[in-house]
Length: 467
Image (cartoon, rainbow, N blue to C red):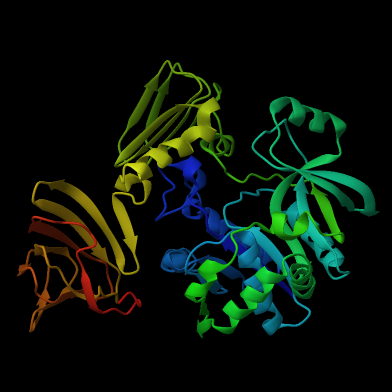
């Protein structure tokens, strides 16, 4: 049995302002297509003969992931982390889970945020990797370089150990431009894609040999894991595991390690320049997504989700427009976008974490306007969904239904409101909003008070376990 394990984490800070902490890179749609997580999931299903993948992700991303994959014929299984601890702890616990499914299971480990268009060639490489994995090899997928890239780690290939694979001679960190050019000229270096294939038993034995403390701690975590349907919730003790990558923990130390130099196209979509490369270009090298006008410009990437963006006489720019933030950068500086996020975090600016429209398990809310003592939101609630029974200490709320039917708990009263009807929720009053209909509910909320922070909430009941 080949079990796909999809690692879905990472903030993607180089892809701000679209990728943010609360809505990170795996949920991005490249060139208006399916999100990266969905594309990875569909590749995983195709290569594993419809075996349900295991998605290892933060517990806060479960509902986002579930909604994105709701229409898949095969439903995912989830291993939910309280906090991210890098790839080694995630893979260690995933391997323990896999051993309980089938003792001879092989794992195909895939990050959720990669883009591969040449899927037949990728599938062929996976079949080759699985053969080696069943012979006790730890198999890496390398990608043949298409240029002297300085943003990737490299693998130096040694002697052939199969018609389609080589021994790994050494790993190399991200090189400078001259070194990367020399690797390209030598021809025996490949990019380290961060994808792996190995038997669950083999990788556990490797963890036991090279990082026994980590593996023992992972076993203790797994014993305390609680399961519910297809969801497995890792305990808070997972956060105490060593924060280390699988490369440092095992791969750079192991002897039974090989690499398949894949000929498939691949991108880790690590920066906006990579997004631009994945989009079709016009005759001047410009790439766009959204409502744009480009005049007398070259090699410029424009992406927007709302208003019209026009560019005239610009060259080699990145212009990324979202409802609450605009990024303008030279393409050559795309790796430095993460510095913006660092500054936003340092100043506690909300734009590092959330968009103006925030996704919740029950639907979304969008901040339309705010000022001293007031905030106006548009709230949408999915059919059958319900917000928590809650109370606010510092604000009152006025609710106006614009479409759909709302069931509202307001203190001791339960009422039904339809379009153009409203209610008032005073501060300190327990309340709940539910959509019992089969169409989306939309309403406008006007908050008034001296403090309007999202943390002014006391939950009493919640179907999503947030109490």
